[in-house]
Image (cartoon, rainbow, N blue to C red; front, side, top):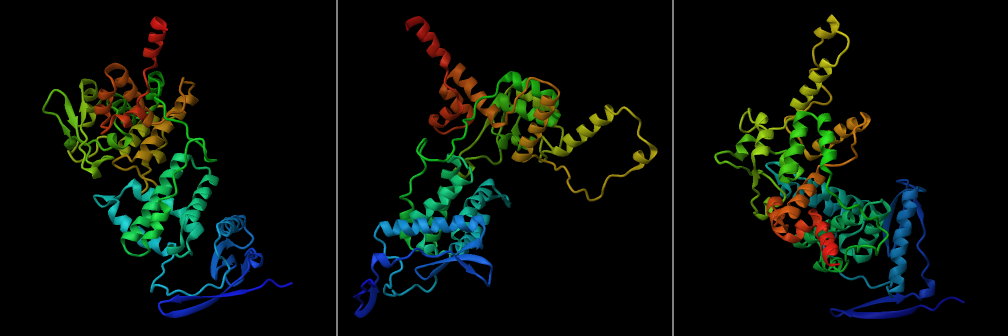
Amino acid sequence: MRPQVRSFSVNYGGIILKGLHMPRSARKVPSYCHHKASGRAVVRIDGNDHYLGTYGSDESHARYQAIIAEWRARQQAGGHSNTLAPQWPKPRFLPTIAELIARYKDFATDYYSWNGAPTRELQAIRYSLRTLRKLYGNTPAAEFGPLALKAVRQAMIELGWCRQLINRRVNRIKRFFKWAVSEDLIPSSVFESLRTVDGLRYGRSSARESAPVRPVDDAIVTATLPFLSPQVAAMVQLQRLTGMRPGEVIQMRPVDILRDTEVWTFEPPHHKNRWRGHQRLVPLGPLAQAILQPFLARAPEDHCFQPCEAEAWRNAERRKKRRTPMTPSQEARSPKTLPRKKAGNFYCVDAYRKALDYGIRKAIKAGAAVTKWHPNQLRHARATELRKKFGIEAAQVALGHSHAAITEVYAERNFDKAVEIARNHG
């Protein structure tokens, strides 16, 4: 027996629009189909084609399952999918998410830059929008909703990203839609609906939890220093004494260091909260001055720590350890005019981390009592030491935090006090 079809009519601005309601039993699950012209898989829902990737691939089947899951969720919520609904007037321009992302990148390239160079936030935005474009690039942006955002988040979970990273990248996606609303490209209701999606909570999702950053032990740092170049070793020691961020210590230049007082002051030209109008001043005491002094004999605008100088030092060390003399042909050999890789005149954060990791691997290979650690742990170690000796306020000022609650993340609590109280009064 065929299901009955009921008709309906709607008065829209004096115009009578008619359509048909299909019964719920007649709504079949949209099929996984092959678009032969492009070789891609496609599924049609409500008259809209959603391309899923290469036909037959695992990626296309996963994308199909995500779309069908959203479709079923709408069915359970009472949505009228696969219904001959009235054709409402459409706006003149309905951009897809891929088109909006292309326009947003033009804006972000100019906005997230410093002295003409892109910042790390621009790279983070690209990574965040990559998953969105992959899953919903052909979807009209005005049709993107909370269910679709949760599907993007679930895809991030399946990629193995940690919960904190997923929350940050989902927030960047929300900020992307907020920009689209401000440019009058999509209705404001799209962004307002996405705001209802809360971030993942600790222990209440399948996303993995990242291990907290712990302070590195001074003995491990001391055992690593002999295996580092003088430039990297100096940056490590300065971080340990001042609590600077890795992105701050690599910027040090003679022109940015005020040396007319007993305690020098370093003001990074760019730092994490510069865009908020905050000033960052790093005091440099006698120990830090002694470490920094050999690297100040250069032009005021040049960086104190340069990879090209570290490369020259490593080459000189190799020559000293050479057991056999160089042949005449080797001595006459000239350097390459266009080398594939050439050391620059300043470190970036990743280069600093990789140089430190290279020294750690050498130390482990040599049998030193060293384990894996990274530059951010030096900042945590300094914060913990200052909090233990001088209190949370001293650690807050030294690290350049606006609020003590942020310093709590970096400075470990002084458990020794609790042990002393328990010994005497417990």
